Image (cartoon, rainbow, N blue to C red; front, side, top):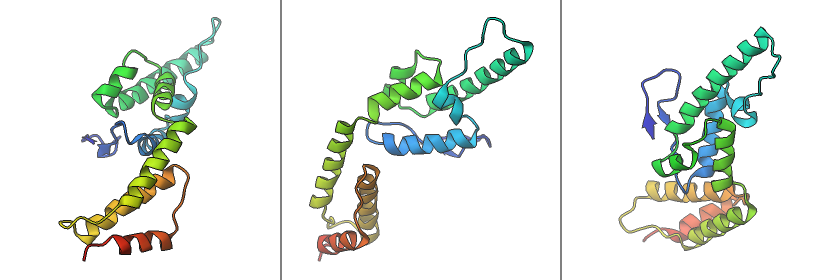
Length: 168
């Protein structure tokens, strides 16, 4: 996480890494919405026509300024490796699509990640040196990851798993 002393941004910003795209994406959408930037990121800046009026030019200039604000936020919220994927683009919409294509929405990727998390859940055991609170947090995190990929585990199933997985 990156810390900023600026009142316009949260104290910590999420950093995109290989394994956290879904959560990063959710956090970034909230950040962009609270900054009034999500529509620009999602749709891009509308092109300026050749015979644009002064009002349209002013609106375009303001949109460009906001787009660079969103670009700055994205640059702060990607790891150095991921920055290389997007550093040549000045379009936040294009960058968002590049990251989505690289990390996101393909059904095969989602299915593989879901199966990986489910397998990890099945094999989950409390470590001898781990306290119950830490183990519970680890289970909750894994259950939330499984939920992110579209499968929900009931509270009863999770509690049962925790009880079976505790150390003596």
